[in-house]
Amino acid sequence: MAIPDFQTLMLPVLHVAEQGEVRISDVVERLAEDFGLSADDRSHLLPSGRQTTFANRVHWAKSYLGKAELVELTKRGHFRITEQGRKVLAEKPKRIDIKFLRRFPTFKLFRDAGDEQDEGPASITVDVTPSLAPDEVMRNAHRQLEVALADDLMQHIRAGTPAFFESLIVRLLVAMGYGGSVTDVSKALVGGTGDGGVDGVIDQDALGLDRIYVQAKRYADGNTVGASAIRDFFGSLDRFKATKGLFVTASSFSSSARDTAAQLSKRIVLIDGDQLTRLMIRHGVGCRVEETLQIKKVDEEFFE
Image (cartoon, rainbow, N blue to C red; front, side, top):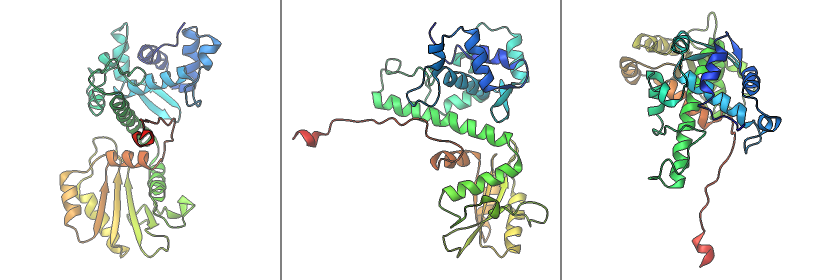
């Protein structure tokens, strides 16, 4: 049989997750058996050559279920069904697809952040969007893929430990060109007992003429960083005689927190979860290039 599309795989993935914590690679093998895929179907690769088409579609199915909070990540490469996912299975749906998932607010927010393409990443074509030029379809799909990637990155961040989050921020700063000659990230981390309210210190330039003091608060979604946390960080900077600091959270900042940071005498830059994942994607931290597509057009000067 043909390799099933990622929407067809959504319900089977959720059924497998019903058994408890599962490993995504095991789910791929289990569903390949359930669908009776041939050896050729199982080994068929994406154009990038890095992943099989079937595994890619299973991953997308799991990812979209996660956007609707029907499954959740537990640790690297593992996930499980949520209570909301169990309620969905209790309804005994015949199929779960994008239209079905739109009933869930978190999924609708995710889709609205893209370009309202209901066909999904595995089936966006020029035919379903006749009002768009082919290159516009590709750009819209690219934006949608980045929205999905940002959400996946945040799920992994929240599944990690606070120590991992602190290390992540330093790695990101190094990737952005800060840190001078820093090669060992652990040397920039100072979090722990007696850290003085600072989680990391990193050189701003190659010579170490100035330093950036970092506060990293992972925080769960909805746990907003308030003005008091900013004032506490300001006090920590004062103790270190620092002139500037970076406060990063995986959640968001209240309006009063942003106002406080803007009014204080020391420069404090605030980065929330949305900004964090955008920076990670831009600088290749926690993600990698899977495939490169080039859009070419006729060089008119060549034919003159």
